[in-house]
Amino acid sequence: MKKLLVITYLLIAMVTVHGQSYLGFVNKTVNLREGPGKEFNILLTVNAGSKIFIISLEEENEFLNVIDIESGTEGFVHRDFAKAEDVIIAAPGSIFSTTGKIDDENPVLTVKNNTSKILTLKLNKLVFTFRAGETRAISVPPGSYRVIASAPRVIPMTGTDKLEKNLSYRWKFYLKDE
Image (tube, rainbow, N blue to C red):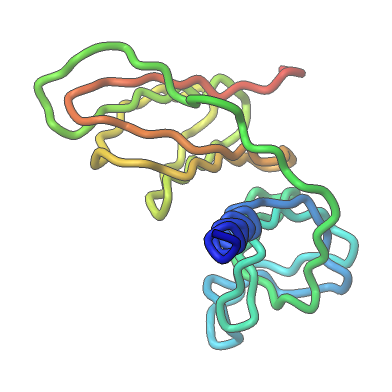
């Protein structure tokens, strides 16, 4: 019984660390790259002290997947130059609101970008970009999604939600000060 409790605790701890996002900064001027390695193209240079959103502390080739908050650009930086400061609390409960049944098996999500900024919406590995003020319906496979919504100069929002087949959903991205 003790072994089972220890194993359960370790599994929960692993999920918490790897699924957890952080607000942090880069401690040196670094290149934000398209992928996890020096062989990948440079997207932009991030100045020392710049704020970053660390998607997870899970490393890939010693690189971390981050979002530069100033530009809203997602990429990779070497782990030695990214420092986590604050835990980002995931949005509680469902992110998307169910609007009804549909004939299509794939769920349809209608997204309204109710800001003056370009919105990037990431559902697991699927990435969608919305112009300022744009409303668009997107069809995605049914399933559970890690959701990250980001825009330039905005701390990204993160959470999880499940999109079920034959259902439509809606979501509005807005900023409190706009």
